[in-house]
Image (tube, rainbow, N blue to C red; front, side):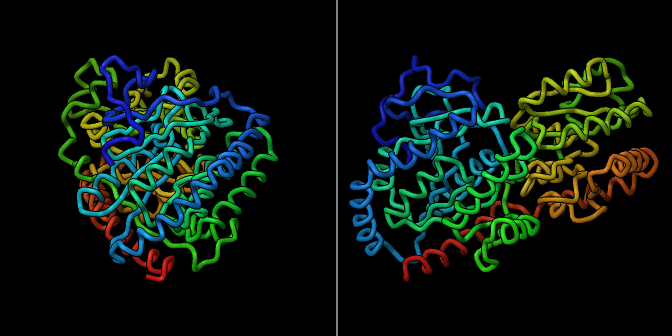
Length: 482
């Protein structure tokens, strides 16, 4: 899957994206430029354009889909029954977020270890055409796109069906896993069902809670919940990374328990090492100019690393930190990442020397910021897993997380950090305790770092991908009677 369907030669002069380059992503081929509707700002009325475009695209391509169905059925009979080919589809691959980052690490690992895995999504609106990045990630030409309501720098998009059909014929797949219930996923799902391809889904995003948090119109929450019930009902079984969200799938979205599968996720932990601590990365961003800030008596370091957005519960963290830092002049907080809420946070902490901002980082710089942190703060209650929590712990940094969602399953108990209710007094007490442990009980702190690192090793690529492909093989046998 190294070249795009109907691809053109990549020219050095081509302006393929008006955004700054995203770390680690390299365009290796392009799709032809095709017509697409003008990118739209957010709006409830504009959202109404999505269903007609989805169903219109489906019906216009119905003859080709039926033809593809017969082709794939014949091809599957001639293909080895125990060889499973999986396409992972996510609309938001062309953005910077936990889902995109995780998939962009997992898929190349699978492919490097002989697994037939493919990755596809939509090209962002800043691109004039679809592209292939790193020779395995297909960002399809879009037909329609609009900003997400209440979620800046992210969009709802619908791909062109033609390139999808050509790709499925060139690279036949047995299963398609959907990562989010977005408009493009709906269209690809309908197309896959007509083409006779087994579909299933992965519950990666707590969309109802996001909607309640970010969108003012209350009716949107109930509308989104209704749509999700339909989508996940069509894409069973549903994979969940933790028990909390497995319970949500059965209780709120009415998915039968036997159609919910809990599977571990894996991360490239080799990129995040305890050896990165003390290399001077933190000092590049905290404005340290005096010896006390760089020597043994430096300030105690707390960090938040991730998407800077309200659904991460950062308003709560800001309030807690303001009160905590007012009592101590030996603590500091580093925000690492980018998002629409960053400007408000900078205004909130204007003039506060205890808070620093490192921007969006990757590679050794990101690993160094994790490792140089003494404690990692993650108050989100909407994360189904928590990639950043695993990454922080893999560098030996204890994590302080909420008692809801995936992160608390990673931390497990107080020997690797703290698991807390969303209550200011609880968090203030925990921060005070962490400060005391770091200053007065180095043996306990060293043990916390050791346990945090050990627990992160549960989420290796090897263990997670092995479990996933065992599940995929069983799913293929069940779907096609092979």
